[in-house]
Length: 221
Image 1 (tube, one colour):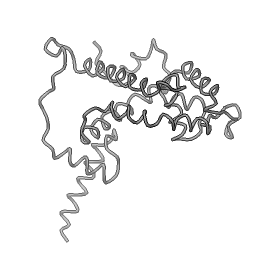
Image 2 (cartoon, rainbow, N blue to C red; image 1 turned 90 degrees about the vertical axis):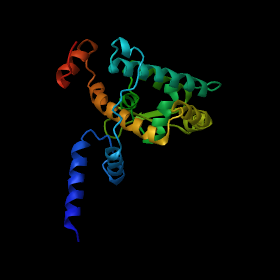
Image 3 (tube, one colour; image 1 turned 90 degrees about the horizontal axis):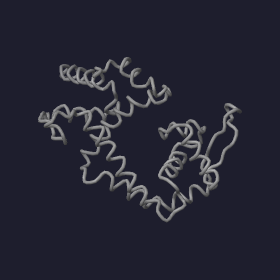
């Protein structure tokens, strides 16, 4: 047996583990294969063009604007998907989708799952309760908390719209190739893993930017 090959593979696995601390790739053989593929692909060092680049606009500014634009595009398709239904907003069906996928949870768990502030989340929950699409009961873990679950009526309402919802999500990804989608998921997952713990701390708005800058050593302007 060529033990040098085993040593080389072990060294590669160690490099993969060290390079994947942010979990851009899944910690399994598929993630390792994707990492190897990216590692062996020629780097695209040429910077892409973005609007305003020639006048000094930063990449960070372009990324923020594009994310805002994409969110607005997605909302227009979601609005179309729920037209002629009893859903008031896209958040209504997203709450139901999460309850269907993850099972019952407390009100705050459901609100945080959807990255929303408590007042907005409570209004959505109240609306879903009024529709009879969700129900609440005392938690077995903590009697002070209410747990929310989806009802058969909620599942039926969701099922009636799922075809249009899937079509909307397909449109949002546009003409991206499979490889593009996988790369985008890795990048967005990395951003989500950075921001979600900060969001969950409920830092006061007046302190938020300064706190993040200090803790993560961003260079202030």
